[in-house]
Length: 221
Ligand code: DC
Image (tube, rainbow, N blue to C red; front, side, top):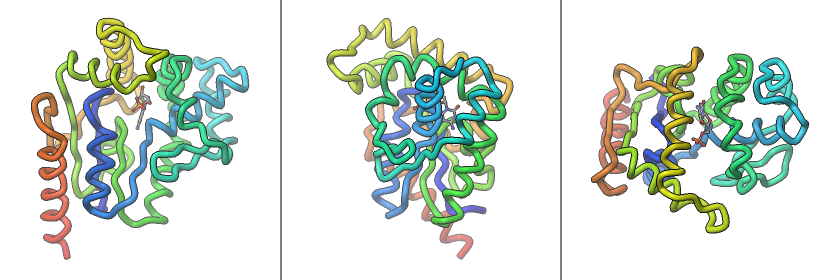
């Protein structure tokens, strides 16, 4: 068993908020793997690479250096935290992240990240199923479609703001793609703790996850 909290789920389920708070509570580093796929997508678009071209996207993934310092994402040393959230990247990231060769590169980086730190909180879509199937705690977060759309819209910058219905259609399209792709589809690990965050406060969810992690890791000490 690895001393990892794996947090998976669809967009807008609250993964980043919960991951940051759990990490703060446990004093552990946090890794946002969605930001890694976004950074590779940004690099591919900047290089004029077609997001549907798997080998070319994988070559980009191998070539670039993606790093995270807290909530800042660095691409070859440059802060791209805002750029990776633009609609152009959001539109292309599902295509880029569906290529098995891209995933192989990033999964290896994610596993290496843990080796250097020994313990951490990692959020994404395949963390409990593929990246750390032996994580101490696996959490699968969900929320109602309307709530997820509302959260995503509130996170977007005012100049890029869409209506709830537009955000909902976009989330639905991405989630359907992420859930139905052949490699590492978004799905809960069989032993994941499933938490619907629609009507729960962040504090309540964080408490459940932290308690579970403490109980599991204490049991093996
Ligand atoms: O969590 P996010 O919206 O920033 O993720 C961006 C995209 O990356 C999302 O469409 C799915 C993909 N992704 C993935 O395939 N595997 C992960 N571990 C994390 C994200």
